[in-house]
Image (cartoon, rainbow, N blue to C red; front, side, top):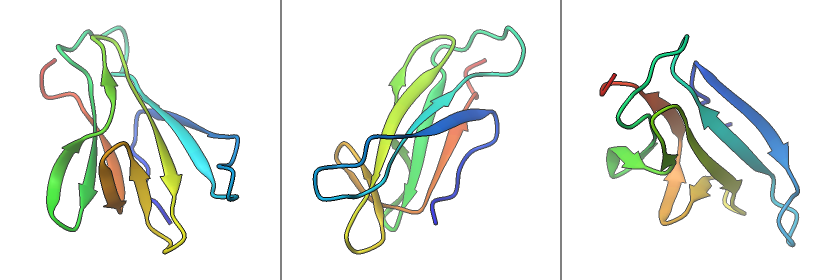
Length: 90
């Protein structure tokens, strides 16, 4: 199971052609806070801070996809165990 972040909206999107589940994740800072940027990060076996989102001042969005080995990926990040919102630049 993928660890999901607080302050995030997420929903299932259409599965991949081979049937793997995908989630669209959107991180938005609380209230009307503007961050430069808002970040969506992943934890993998080799890193605790892999940027996976498309970052904007008010949100960051990414799609994570399950893999046949029961791990998750997003873009070039693989074996994702947890995703989190990064609001350190607020």
